[in-house]
Image (cartoon, helix red, strand yellow):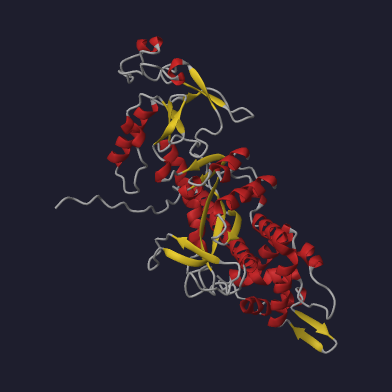
Length: 487
């Protein structure tokens, strides 16, 4: 993709909307020889280099700036008239301005800079298109890595981390660098398609737990006025301590939709006699096999899906249902399934008048616990604090909602696409978290511009085909292979 005048105008609009160039221009060191390169022009040059699918090297930034048309070079102070005649921007000036900028803004300013630039790349017409987001992290290997885990690397901020990947030719194992995290907009449940724009990013070494960092990132979004609804995450987030993930997100009003780690599935104790499992409370007489239902595999057949959902529907008969909203202190009440008319139990005589199409408890507890002796019980906020979520896990409603999480996976695939940005090891050869984060931020801005252009083109094509009486184009789906047959 070549960088043309239209792209230049879009990038300048985003930088101006973020409102960071003027602020950081004032924070730059003064004195000595006047600086030719303004901060705004430097930011434009970084975006220009990345949008032209060049590596995020400062030499490429310099080449992108001096390669602009003559009117733009004069307007952006790339070429200036001085006492000794016309002077063109040098690489040394680019390097010096970039280093001074990173040093001047500091850690807090860097976070504000990156948040403002990424948020400005989301047009106003798309900011309120959805409140649902998907989150994930990926490896971001640094260029100068040590020879082994005990050696010292040239990047002082990076550290060793572990990655799991299914990329061809790449095996799981250690890497040296950072964890890059992204918050991607996804469609609402049952809602219209939205442009899957990245709303926020952050970058930390693997020595920093990525889960509290992401919780803080979502918190900054909410503080900035971004409405947070469904938050979709894999078990890498839900498996951590609830006070680092689930609890702070619930305080923000987010609805969690997350996969559960194998260690968090199944029965995990009791509360007033009710069994705690998969984020819910269950009748103590529930058949144990119904608490061992696991998510379907990707290659599940229609028959396997139907059998799984029928078995899960049977398990829901034994679930204690919520009968009150959560109060200000985090408490709510749930009702006995027999009292709610979902099954027959001798301990609830009125339930025995229900039809025989409902399950019947044949061996009720001799000494009924509170969940059986009472019609309802109070559930404090620390019960199922880690596993509680919006939908019953792993039922069809959860499966349908959680499938939207692939939006953040597509974000990372566009970042690492060798045919475009190619944000992999060697793409950026700068040292330090701050410099890598600045480059990754502009890669996000460019990626959002491309996704938005493709989304608008697809929507215009659908409108044109609809006006012509044609069906919208269908997207290609992954082909399912038939299950292997026995020899």
